[in-house]
Length: 194
Image (cartoon, rainbow, N blue to C red; front, top):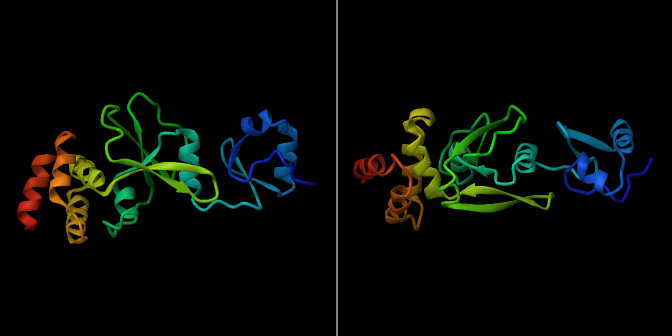
């Protein structure tokens, strides 16, 4: 059995290939023959094109606005030694958190401030990208949500960020002024660490 040329190299949904003329029956036969792998509920990939971070791929395929946040974003930026057990993904309020693999922790952020400090990074081998909050936004969020995330994570990240070249406390305070419950704790932490 050969893989149809309509099957994309990057992860795909059953509906994606149905539009390209590949039937469900053919997709299941490819899966049973070991040519296609089901990576999550309703998501597939060709066995000859393995994707490295399936959790991020699943997140962005379920919610295109998915953004790496909190401890996961801090770890991405090298601002914490903590290795999150689950990937922290933010979506704007008003969107329902989808059912996904247990390795994803969904967070609902205010839609008005959702894009502050948000950039996109490519997901290798997929042709897709996922949002990522900047180091400043990630630190502010850690202080803002210190009740659930832990004060130690926020302080550790701030300390690491201050050691980096080019770190500007003014940029951090500007970001904090746009998000609730964070400016005061950050000012106190900066005074303590100075």
